[in-house]
Image 1 (cartoon, rainbow, N blue to C red):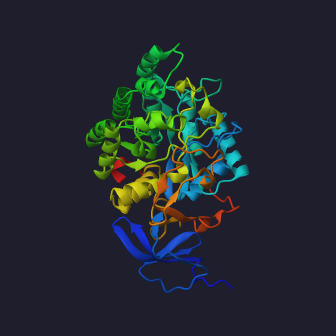
Image 2 (cartoon, helix red, strand yellow):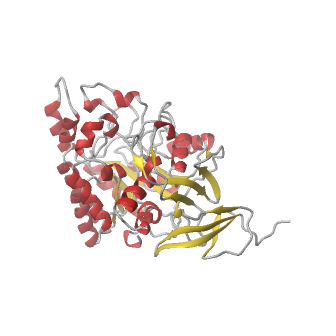
Image 3 (tube, rainbow, N blue to C red):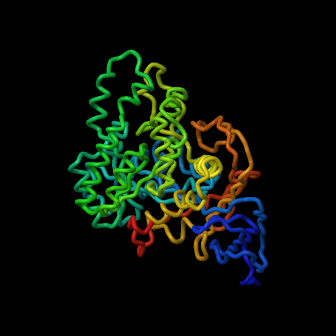
Length: 470
């Protein structure tokens, strides 16, 4: 007979990261939910985890990953992608709509993606983005009703012009789509770069025998980001569409977005670890693994982003994990433009932010936890069950050792293709254990298990995802 008072798991003596600071606490878990957080829990437990000397944080909610299923064969999929996230302390992710065939721009495509993940499984919980493209304005309401967490649109070319691939929107489709998305109380995530500026600047490099990394960087200047950000903010103001600006690469754009927030625009902004770790000089040194769009910018921009994080002007951090088969990162040595643009980094995001943000720069862990977990959960309607350590929340928990130095090597990576721009970097911390709804899905000693019990997450219907709630 079951003892109703007995805990399933007790995490004992860890430094628990809560919104008001870090406290040595015990955490009691029953039926996948946190039932008690207190200095000393006396209830007996089936399992006890000694967390002394470790930091206990809410599982990361990564709102920006690209798992390229169905239809793309050798690309990263749900099984390996979610394994790498589990190893990195992520317990919920939101999959982007573009790198799949078909892209997730119709209800049928949503069903195909869900059928795929049911077959291959996910190690942690997940939600799905829908897409806004020029051809699917009539599908947006049905997509919202089908359970997508929000919508994603590109103001510049996503890069693949093949039949059936994801397409960028023009201003008319963007504006009309935002009106529909606003009526459904969903969030529109936007890749904000001006296609007009990029095309015009790229033309001068066409026909050259050699097109370098520096040429690519110069073809996507800061002006392209700022122009697009200003335009879509105007549309958001006029349509009252909740807006989220993804992978912002510059403090100048953050400042424009911040001003719009102060004027009442419902907008949030994310940046990504690669903009916080690297500079344009690193891109030239590293080569193809560091190619992304918007591109990594100067040390001035990097330091400006860290300053905006400390000032509370950046809402959250997401990985923008955008992997590809190795052959697409090789390309031609003489043509940097032809190389796939995307960075594999989801497994390292929490360790990067803990190491660089907390250990080296002294940012409070409660701030980093809000950026990585609480704020994205709130924005996309997954709060209060996700993104926090609190009684009644899902037991999505990560244990981090603050003094476990190691050098990241390809063999540590769980991606389908073990390539990462962070390989060779020394980390001073390490994820020791990840728990998803009370189930241990990763330990450093044993790796990820066979269980793939991640569940599809829908936005809480009563949640108001206004920026002011963050």
